[in-house]
Every structure is written in C-alpha cells, then in structure tokens.
Image (tube, rainbow, N blue to C red; front, side):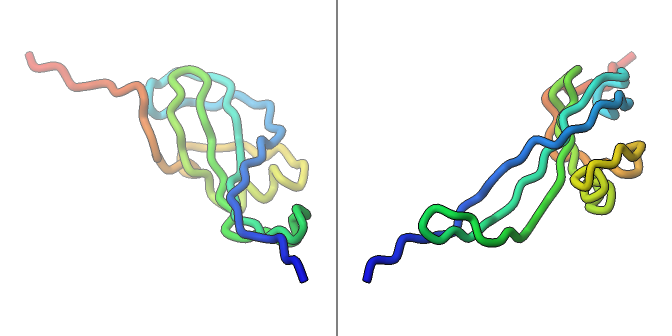
Length: 102
C-alpha cells in the first residue's frame, strides 16, 4: 500500500481594500492582509488546517504586523472591518526611524 501525505505550511492572500495608518513610518497606505497556516494533505489534497495566523504588510515601508485573530477571521468571512493600531502587533520593521541626538 502506498501512502502519499504530509504536513506543510501555506499562505493565503485575503481581500482587504482599506487604507490604514502605519505605525512604523506614520503614513496612511494600502496594506496586504494574509493568513499563514499549517495543513495536512493526503494524496496532495489538503484535508484540514490549523495554527491560522493573520498578518498585515504595509505598502509604504513593507513593515509586517500580526493581526488580531478576530479581525482576521472577519476578513476571511468576506467582511471589511476597520483595522486600528490596537489590532496590530509589530513583527518586522524594514523602515526604522532612529531618534536624533541634539
């Protein structure tokens, strides 16, 4: 008997079309919301997903934030909730503003 299956990581880009304020650079810009997850496949057919996490990548400076799960699940259902700075937790900054010394 031949068994072809395994566990892999996936990424899905979600449809979200609002502008939000970037906490990294301070500008208002479009963002990409995406979900990462682990899944089990059997004969190359994904059967179930777990460990779903939602992220926001800013178009202005490419900073990445982890999004609150409730907001991410609402976007996944097709809703367009407002994302506030309280819903975002910094993961990666590519644009860092360093304090100046006077």
